[in-house]
Image (cartoon, rainbow, N blue to C red):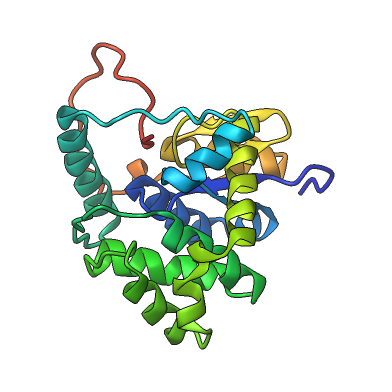
Length: 237
């Protein structure tokens, strides 16, 4: 594997496609998961937005239409069914995404970043819990043997806020416009369906050497014949 340029994995604890990418990456390509820099991305609250504005950073975030929301519900169920996974769709009530994402930075400082991501995704997509609540983050921190209350209050720490802005700045510099998003050097890869292409680039091998994609498995669902261009698959803003 090439080591001169560190690959980047931009993920969101909110996004179902990031959850799918996380599991495919860690379960099927652990060498690349270990080699990559993991960078969180989220929709900022007013405080973070003010910091980004001061830094002249404008994230490419747009409101999701009702039609797209319903499509994602269907698409994620297809994708999880193909993998033999169960999914429980959570309900977000006025979420503040700094709460889990800045807590991730603290967990990562303690060497438990990926464990934190794993438990947050499990709580959100398998247990249907609201991971934007401080109580949920505190419980996950305690489960990891960390200071749950400190993790839950991460968004109150000005220094962690600044570190969060640097994560979002990194996404902006790499040209992120949705998640999951992967980068290697100057090459960018967007969406779940580009995970294997990114893995091949990082390993320095042909795509055929990475292994069969999930849609080659017998459990994969059937899709209609291709029609008009529907945009990149397996990702969302």
